[in-house]
Image (cartoon, rainbow, N blue to C red; front, side, top):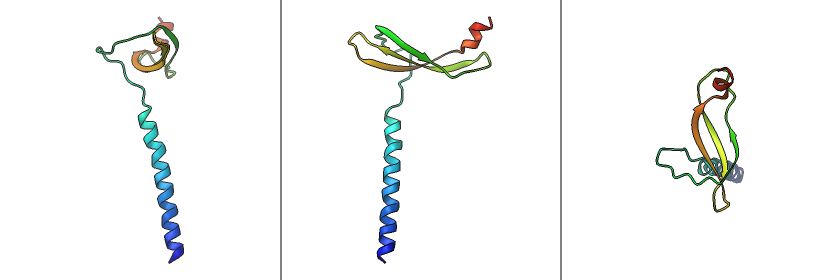
Length: 87
């Protein structure tokens, strides 16, 4: 009977610890740009986008510093770099 309780307690601990990391990832989702978004960009640090072999719209992520010196991120849609480089 004790083995069963310990097994159940161990399984519950694994489930709780595993779900806590999933919930933490949800809270760190990058906000998406909309036409209502008030941009306060003092300096762009980097813009990242997935590599694409086709000219298509991709979701990019911009990391920037605002005028108060706080680093922020924002996702937005743009044409892939291949669209520009292939003319």
